[in-house]
Length: 391
Image 1 (cartoon, rainbow, N blue to C red):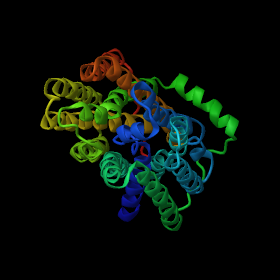
Image 2 (cartoon, rainbow, N blue to C red):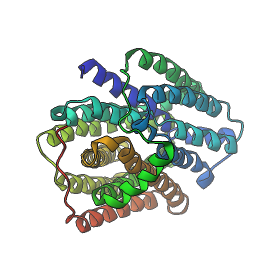
Image 3 (cartoon, helix red, strand yellow):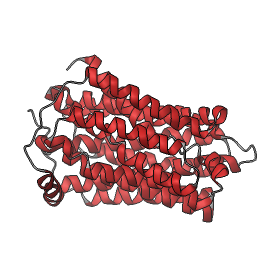
Image 4 (cartoon, rainbow, N blue to C red):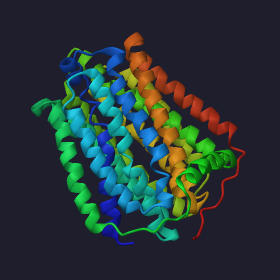
């Protein structure tokens, strides 16, 4: 597998995943323009995550039974249309619907990651997946920085117009560079969907790591869905650009992806990295609760938050991909649907806690979800993971 192709897939994953997060640092500006506030405004990031979970459930399994490149190109076109709808939104209801459609069509990263895992030699699979995941994570974090900057200087609608144009350009580039990939399983769509239930019932490791991913991404979502609102309430009344800059701070967490990938290639597979990552994530909320009145305190918390969330996430993915190579898209579907359902729930819990209890309520949500994750890991420690396959 050419190194240039790995980096292209990493960049494409980051550019497409960014669509899910443009709205978060812009919530204050969107709320003022569309006359919305509080928990109703929280529907925008929440429905984006819900749409993403639904898109993964009904579209990503096709990666096992259809040619992945073709599906990726189709989804690039559809998400560009959804971003245009968001840019044109005249009301909150329209924006919520457009956000749902953006989420449902931004499934390209979840087709690219199994694509990379399938193309990579077994001895390098962890490194390749880690690199693609690193690009995805950097894209997620920089999306907030870009959205904050563009929103401050050009208005929040301009960010969605730019995102739509980027997706059209990316489709053209991927059409010229991605190799065709024959389907891994000759199954009809109803058979694919039925097999999801079978995989969920028969793979206890999948269930455990899906739960861990949902809980930690829920905590992650609670923070990012409320950060812009919290910064605006501070005495300095920080704007969307400041909220977006914390995405750059969080890029430190992206270094975890290649590290965990190499650890997996070398035979690492125990759950100590999950426990450590979840503990660091919980600690981040303690730090931000105690020092959240200052930007440096929030910045330190963001570094810990991203280190914990991304270390746990990639460790989960490597264990899930090791279960059944011919079913990687479906395994990824089940894991990522749980993951983003957790993110949607966390965004809702965070905005609800913010509206009722303020910043302390948001941090309490993050701590509670981290504690539940550690308890679930402790309870599931007896389950035995399969070794990483050599073919």
